[in-house]
Every structure is written in structure tokens, then in C-alpha cells.
Amino acid sequence: MIAVIGLIVGVAVGLILKPDVPIGLEPYLPIAVVAALDAVFGALRAFLDGLFDDKVFVVSFISNVFIAALIVFLGDKLGVGAQLSTGVIVVLGIRIFANVAAIRRHIFHA
Amino acid sequence: MSEIPPFDPAAAAADENVAVEPTGVQRLRRALLHPGRGQVVVGVLVAILGAAGVTQWRIAGTDDDYAGMRQADLIQALNGLQAASRRTEQDINDLERTRDALQDNNDKTAAALDQAREDLATLGVLAGTVPATGPGIRMTVTVPESHLSLTYLLDGIEELRDAGAEAMEINDAVRIVAQSSFETVGGGIEVDGRLLKSPFTIEAIGDPDSLRTAMNFSGGFVDDIALDDGKVVIKRSQHVEIESLHSEPKPQYAEQVQ
Image 1 (cartoon, rainbow over the protein chains, first blue to last red):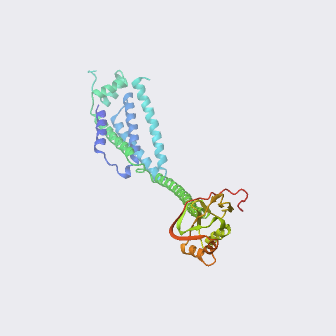
Image 2 (cartoon, chains in turn purple, brown):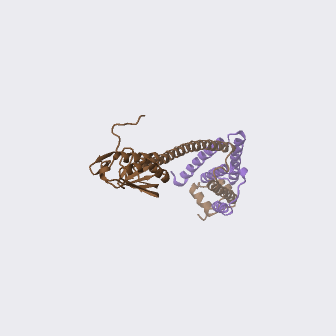
Image 3 (cartoon, rainbow over the protein chains, first blue to last red):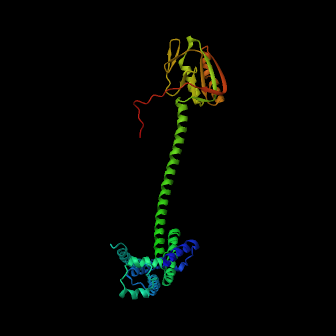
């Protein structure tokens, strides 16, 4: 419940405050959001599996975001930023699909 | 549901081995209805995700395409734009050349058209196909029928031409041009097939003084007519109007030499 409320509050804050993203962080924000989404879906799946641990969630959330940003940063430095961020998005997308499929099996038993 | 304790991960993990394992959906419902302290940090993280997601949504939706792009992408976009710009400039140059050529052509055509119109007016006056007006003389020749001599009349017309007459007319009826034919018939003369009788009114456009002098010199037209018992009255005018027209048939045998 608190998680749902948190999501609503976060969306509201984002909509009302319209925070400005520093130019330097702008390329990382979409990757970070996708990585965080992956962490959240992973957590939901683990929760439904009965394996959820909030410490694990916090660590996986932060490390997901951090590593995704790091990969993109490295890619930028190596001159393959666009390709690497595409790769990261693809991998995270596949993971999100797998997690959502597991969640779906739990909820709809199908 | 009331005997189920609030969700606690540690307890849940401990429960898993002993109690009947609740299904995922039951666990979800329990977590929604009985939030625990562990959910607070989850809520905070999810809130951050929500804010970041909405912000990114806004950036991607409202910002122009180039903000947030990488250097390499920007260079590529710039190259593409430069190539497009070069192509467009090439197109502009081509079209401008075409336009200039067409304009040049148009000017030439307009000049030729003006020249042709001018020629048409000039030649029309000379050929008698358009009405003419201007300074000149109006000459009335009265000749007794018995003494009518076509030679003198032709001489007179030749003298007028010599003196620079540009358009001539007899009796307000027949335009005198290069092709005009003269013939003596009973009771008068026939000019271009039309019978004209004395008195003849000859109108000529040209310099009035020159035309008058050309008629009046001694042994000239006026004297000739006087010898024939005739009478000539010459009036100068600044406004002689020649309305009759000579219709020019298309040449049937003669062709232009190319």
C-alpha cells in the first residue's frame, strides 16, 4: 500500500514540481528509469514468489540504476554510447518481459 | 484474513517452511491491506522512480530532438543537415538559373514583340492597312472632263511621294499605296477599280510646307493642271485624317527568300 502511495506521490511530485534535469545527467535518466522499472518488476515478482526482501530490493534498485548509468557513461567515454544504451535497454526490456510474465502467471495462473 | 499478521519479510520467510504457503495473490492482498515498515523504503524508492519517470516522460515529450543527444549523434545529425542544406542550395541555384534564363527569354520575347508592333504600325501606314493621321495638305483638283489627263495626276502623286508623303488618299475613298492602279475611263478615272470624278480631293500626310512646295514649283503639278484648264487649291493642315484602307492580299506567287 505504501509502495502504491509512494508511486502516486512520486508521479505527483514530478508533475507538479517539474524538476529540471542537469544537462550532464540527461542521457542517463532514461536508462536509469528503465533500470529502476526492472528492479521494481523484479521485486514484485519476488514478492509474489514469496522471496521478497526489502534490503535486497533497495540494493538491487540502487545497483541497477548505478550500473546502467555506469555502462552508458563508459559507452560515452569509449565512443559507443548510443549502441551501449540500446544494448542496456534491450537487456532490461527482456528482463522486464520475463518478470511480467512470471507476475502474470501468479495473478492469472496462466 | 484477520489472523494473518502484518507483512514482515523475515516472518514471511520463516513462515514459508512451516505454515501453508500463501499464494502470491494472497500475499499481495495482505501487503496492500496491512502495510508494514519495510514498505516505507520501498515506497520511497518507487516514489523516486515515479518522479524520474514522469520527468523523463516530460523531457522526451516536450524538449526538442537535440537536447540530451550524444556528441556522436549530434555530429551525425549535423552532417545530415549540412548535406541537406548543400542539396537545397544546389536546388536553389538551379532554380535561380532557370528563372533567370526564363526571365531573359521573356525580356527578349517582349522586346521582339514591341519591335514587331512598331514595325506593324509603320508598315501598316505605308501599306495602307491602318488609318493614319498627322500634318499634311488637302488638295482639291478640278479638271474639265474633256482635258482629263491621267499622266499629270500620276506625276502629281509621284511628286508628293518625292516630297515625303507617307500616306495618301483620293476623295476620302481610295488609299493610294505602292500597288494602286490608275486607269482612264469614260467620265473619270478608275483608281484601284473605283470610278472617281472631278473634282479630286487628294489628302497627303507629310511635312505640309515640303508637300506644298513640291506642287507649286514652276513647271510642276499646279502649272500642268493649269495648262489643262484645271484648277488646284492647296490647303495646309496640321490634322489630316486618312481613314480609307487598302486591303493587302496575301502574295500568291512571290515567296520570301530565306
